[in-house]
Length: 134
Image (cartoon, rainbow, N blue to C red):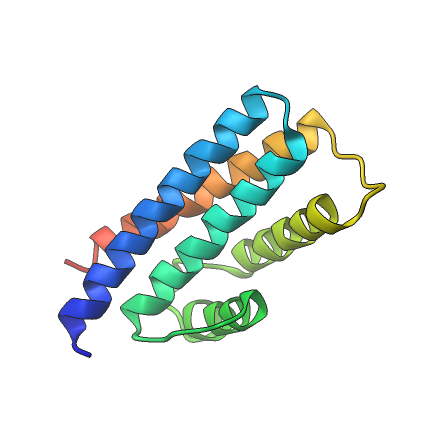
């Protein structure tokens, strides 16, 4: 596969990430906080996959994506993405796991709003980065 394919893939993925963010926002408004956490995390996860596509890297797991993001875009990166981004993403994954799998987990409106806001920041940051590659 060539550069054009991976660039198109990154654009398709960041568009999907933006859709997932919009879904998280709607779920927050409907007070479906656990579902909002889920969609917010997946917006972030799809953004990571969009970034990795710009480097022609494919992953099959969330953990693999996070590790590759950390290595390529934080440790070897140009400073656009920071360890703060990594921590926020790791936190979003923990909240998503609790929201999806812990039957007794109680999330608040504030927590869900924080997750949705984090997704917005990250999706926008990745979109700007990808647009800058043109």
